[in-house]
Image 1: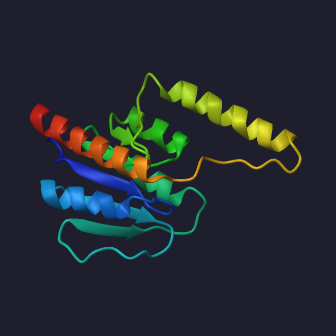
Image 2: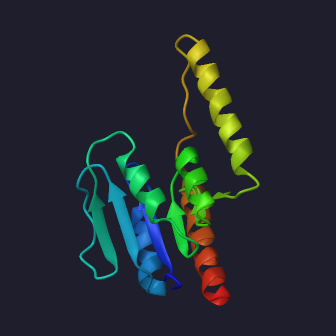
Amino acid sequence: MVKSLEILVDADACPVKEEIYKVAFRHEIPVTVVANAPIRIPRHELITRVTVNDHYDAADDYVAEHAHSRAIVITADILLAERCLKADAVVISPKGEPFTKDSIGGAIAARALMADLRAGAEGAAGGPAPFQKADRSRFLQALDETIVRLKRAG
């Protein structure tokens, strides 16, 4: 059985939920919003909220278990992205950067390196750069292009 196209959102810290909803409505694609705590979602037949328990990786586990070849996963979590890629899902960061099977190894290595640098540098600030308007625009374009490509592929 071929699964339908859908969007799975790692929603706890996702800054582009409203953009996801707009694109999903336009393309009539269901969205599953997964979080550790209840979050507001639009009342719409295409949007489903899944609130998992507060176990550390519960939201990631749910997304990874439901990822498949017709799923578009939205996450900034590199390790979750790797798990979803293994399920043949398409994975896009909230900044519009695709995670691919070719790029995920380098992303994991860079993540580990940055964690080591932060751990070794007393008082060092870390983390990703602030979310910008250009990131939002790049995300919208990447999501729309991905949906069009997957629809064409059948």
